[in-house]
Length: 296
Image (cartoon, rainbow, N blue to C red; front, side):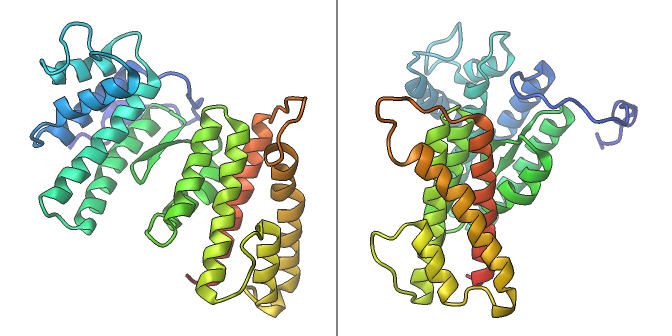
């Protein structure tokens, strides 16, 4: 009913400037309405979420008028509407209210499939609002991720998160999402470590499930060799796999060895954003390739 109105059709047909560091008031108000839709049928949603965020941020209240436990809905509304808003707090609130709702649905006996459909419905609305406001963010599986490149995000980052979003690859998903968050927080060395942890976990899961032996102390390089020796890639694709193996050893692995894994000694090493971003993208591509090739 509300789609395809004049204001939507009349936008200029040009690429928008992608926004990262600010949230337009219109978008923040739209998020407020989404919050109300999510929490309207919860028993203690506003109060519980207000309390959890106050504890996280070390505040007695997130609002300027009411203390914790008194008109919590108004305090959370102020998080979205006040002029000196906190972008990270808003994103934390958006993620937390979805987790809270899903937890309550689970407690009420709803199935996992029902809860997944619920998350997908809410995410579609949130991502629509992000897109309408030219924001460089997207929510994936209940977590807000920064999109530095639309193509890379669509082809690598999002599929990697989605493919590993299951109990089987739980540790891979956790490490890879944490790598993204470390990068977004400017902690680039931590990003490299987490990204390579996710790749190493992927390789170990494949080797374990296939019954391919390796030593406990083996790192990514040796694990890649084990997968290669056991024919993870068909022989007719040997040249392609050799290229991938070379790329891993000359791209991702040396980044970790040189910048993240062996300490700084007396000199502090600075990992540039572009280097961390490159390692993150390459790692995501490798995880996608290995999981799909293994048919796990």
